[in-house]
Length: 153
Image (tube, rainbow, N blue to C red; front, side, top):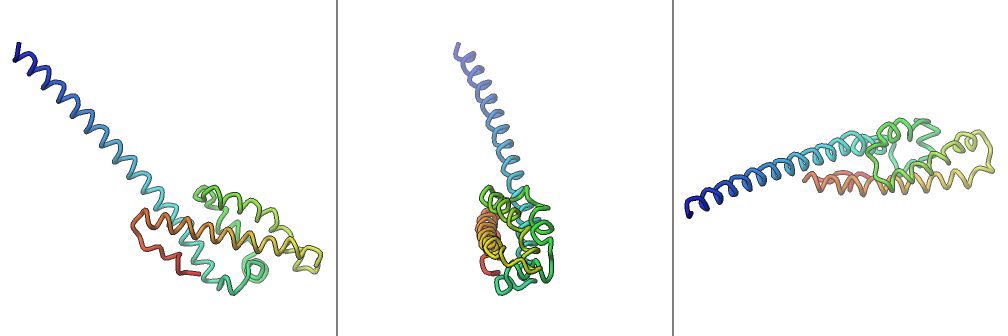
């Protein structure tokens, strides 16, 4: 009787060990995948974006100056191509900025009535940069990297 209980107990311990081992493996795999995705976001979107801003001497040069003088498709070429990496706050700001972006060129051509929309685009861009900066710092900390974007601008 005691030997049967010992066999049942041994089988249960083996099953529990297998279950625990499987669960830990799945958790490790999931954690590794999440870390990889975070790293991909950081390296594909945030670092290139902030490098571009440094190249254009932002915020000394305004968003308007960047778009008109150097890169008319700045938002599309540097953010929209990687929109899947943005957090929800940044996506909302980006959407609003794109709606105002169309007024910048017309304003540069002399339509001064559009100044409020251009000013709003400047504000939205500034908010987007801050949101992306905050997100990039959080990701860097999760990845145990130095949050370089903290001091870039």
